[in-house]
Length: 112
Image (cartoon, rainbow, N blue to C red; front, side):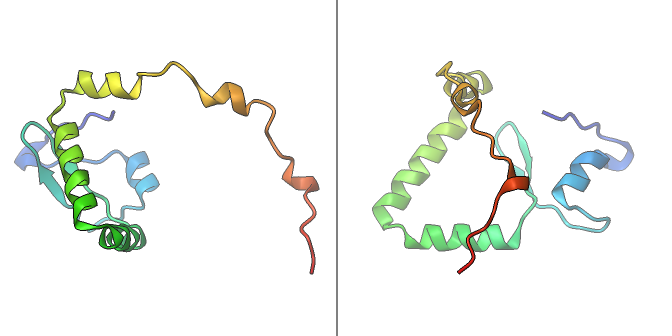
């Protein structure tokens, strides 16, 4: 997790690498969500947003209610509780994926 420092006049500087990787440009507006004990910056991708809205719209009202409840429950957890969930299983897919690499330089596409 990156740490930002509040500068004069309450300005925050987003590190160059994060700006570059996120596609941010000078002058871009970045939505800020003020949660109970956290601040969240949202960098929106219009295509991803449209896909998410389509997905949400395809859900039944009951499924949306359940999703909201689960999201609220997750948001209520402490950082330690969230970490425990993400680290619950020691298994790693890295071991299973070892040797699964494909040499694309020798790949021959099927021509029809």
